[in-house]
Length: 76
Image (cartoon, rainbow, N blue to C red; front, side):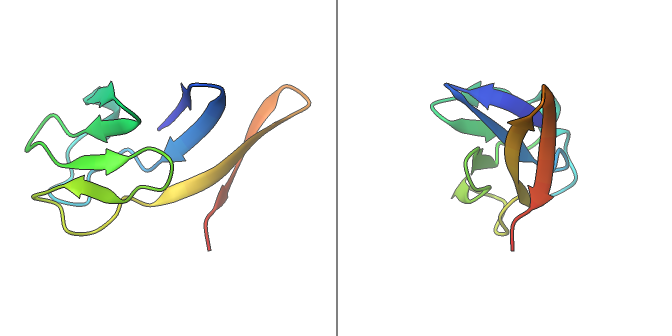
């Protein structure tokens, strides 16, 4: 899942770590995404859990635009 959050590009896996819900169908608000299945909320900037039932962070990616293309790299 790749999107603009203010002036930056953020990227997270689109499958919720709780029960596999489709995060790309969730709501985006205040720098977070909320899973439509069970309401787990993750920070867009780093995938950390804001509100469960998820207990594991969402995998996130470093993102940049290079020559008009979005490039992603897994965070270490």
